[in-house]
Amino acid sequence: MISTQISDTIVAISTPLGQGGIGIVRLSGSKAFKIGDEIFRSKRGEKKVSKLPSFSVHYGYIVSDSKLKAKKQTQGIIDEVIISVMRAPQTYTKENVLEINCHGGIVALRKILELCINQGARLAQPGEFTQRAFQNGRIDLIQAESVLNVINAKTDLALEPAMHQLQGKLSNHIKNLMSKLVEIVAPLEASIDFPDDTIQRMTKKNIVKSLNSVSLDIRKLVDSADKGIMLANGLNIALAGAANVGKSSIMNALLEYERVIVTNISGTTRDVVEEVLNMRGVAVKISDTAGIMDSSCVITQESMNRSLACLERSDLVLWVIDGSRKIQKADLAVAKKIAGRKAIIVVNKNDLSLKVDLAQIKKNMPDAAIVKISALKKQGLDSLEKTIINMFFKGQIVGKDEFIISNIRQKQALEDCYKNIQAALGVVTEKGYEECLVFEIRQALDFLGQVVGDNITEDILSNIFSRFCIGK
Image (cartoon, rainbow, N blue to C red; front, side, top):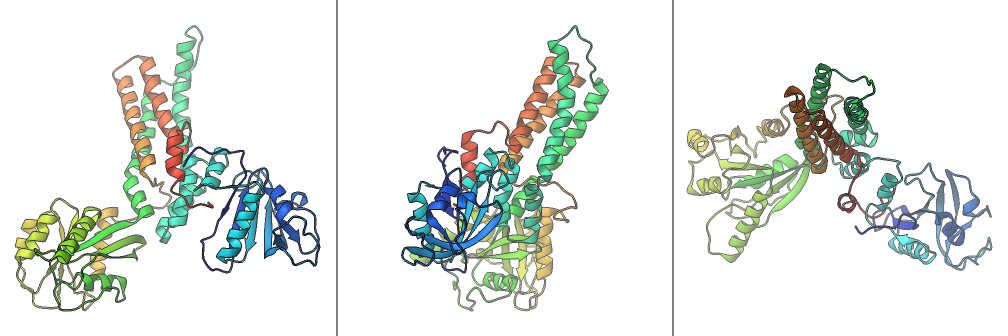
């Protein structure tokens, strides 16, 4: 995102393009109501938009010419609409906001959008409405980032921490930690600046106690990062194995419908097939890959390349083995391809006589759990799902009243903060200079400030809001 002029009035279509019952064109800025005066004609002959009360809705028409104000005149009407008037500062952006609710056809939406631009608005950039909410002080950066998590949430468990962040619960926790650090550092700074004055300060014992308390809370937040990121983004799981071991059948069984073609012909699956499912409250993108084998066939080679690329970007590999036969060279070839990756060994066809040597399998992947299932009979799937969830979430996915961070930016800033607090503790215990203690605590405060959006750089803001859709 390029640097924007916050004084501009911006406009965007805030609903997905395509056919629908309702479409919304949103304006924000000082000229929003003036533009409304030019393009809206009330059905009941009410006041101009700029004179209407805040938090009111009005029925009428969008017209292409501001001179077409006659009540019964139909020439120049673009659409029949309801407008919502919201006056600053009690709005999403803390600016004047006008929302035009029209029919959800692409032609009507685009004509209204173009009309607003012709009247002086600028097309909004991705996330610019939320960026203005942040820049105008209505929300902090954690809350701004949580907006995207709420929009992208695919499960209840992903939505819950996103809503907690949007409500400011994590922000308040971070600010409380900052207050504790300020209570330590402010008297120290004052005593350094005014050595002749008598200034009450914390004892070293209390400083250590307070720093340890903050350090523990920061560590908990950092440790929650992987969980929070997975809840926000979901898990990427790839099914890998030799041809005809039942990968596609497992995918169909987990999805509970026939998503992938299954036959007894080797190499039925040629391309990577992906689908998203809700696994015990966690969004999981599961990918069925082509059976890994050696071949001179150009199509098969391309299938292998795509399969290997899928395995490379996955969070977890399910190594699928046919339990009704002895281990094959093709199985061992797969083991080599996924060596070093987080994996679960899935022994399929458990409804048949077990012939595979489990000890030999375990030798090839000693750290991987083994789960026996039958995709055909839908046996063992609960055990497989439980093993997957426990591997990443260690039992309980989200604890009651647990604070969770949800992206790498927050995690990195908190890790840096933790390092400075540990350094501050080292200064106290080693009886170092107070100036060094103040420096470390101030650095820790800066990193906590970055989490909520204090002293944030334009590049970071651009990176965050560029991931939003236009209109939010």
